[in-house]
Each structure stands twice: as structure tokens, then as C-alpha cells.
Image (cartoon, rainbow, N blue to C red):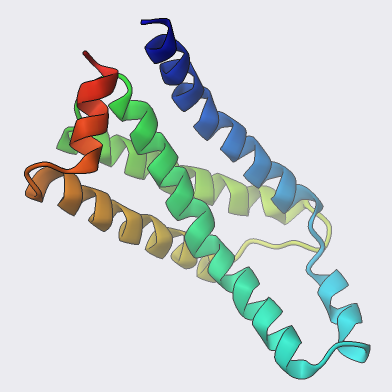
Length: 149
């Protein structure tokens, strides 16, 4: 019983810690610092770094959505309305983070970044939705059952 309570507590706190880390990263990362590398690093390496930074949005907010789902599963089964709640929270946090970047030096609000955040969330939503509601014996259902016994 104690293990399940502590696991539930960890799964509740984890999305909040992750959101705090996103906030810190967007507050302190200076994309201009990458441009200094153009004099010393090969173009192909710079292209790969740029692609990784752009794909970071997809992963970053997809992971946030996944962590929110895990938190919800620790308190009961997943429903469509709970899925939408997690979706809304993840998208809203992406919007709040972009608005926050308006006042951060070297950063700016970007609709393209919001779109990348949304795509990452949608991809993870699709994977979770399909595995939870379509597959009969999914790992997510087993996890939910284990946490709520």
C-alpha cells in the first residue's frame, strides 16, 4: 500500500517538475549562442543541432502530455474527458511558455513553435488513445489497474 501511495505521489509531482524544467530551459537558453559555433563547427553538425532543437518541441510537449496521462492513471481509469483535460493542460502550457518568452531576452513568441508543440502532443495522444481504448490488454490499462487496486 505504501509503495502505491508513494508511486502515486511521484506520478503527481513529476509533471509539475517537468513543467518547471521546461520553464527554466525557455528562460535561460539563448539560441544565439549556437550561432557562435558557425566559425568552428562543420555545417552538417550545425544542421543536425538545429534539427534537434526544432524536434525538441515535439518531444518536449509530447512527454508533458504523457506525464499528465500517467498522473491521471494513478488516480483511476482514463476517460475521454480526462484525455481532453490532459490535452488542454499540455497545449495551454505550451501557449503560456511561448507568451512567457516574449519577455525573455533572445527569445520570442512563435506560432511555429506552438504548432510543433501541438504536433508532439497529438502524436502522443494518438498512441495513448489507440493503446488504451482500442487494444484490449494494453500496458496502460494494466498500469491503471495496478495503481488503483
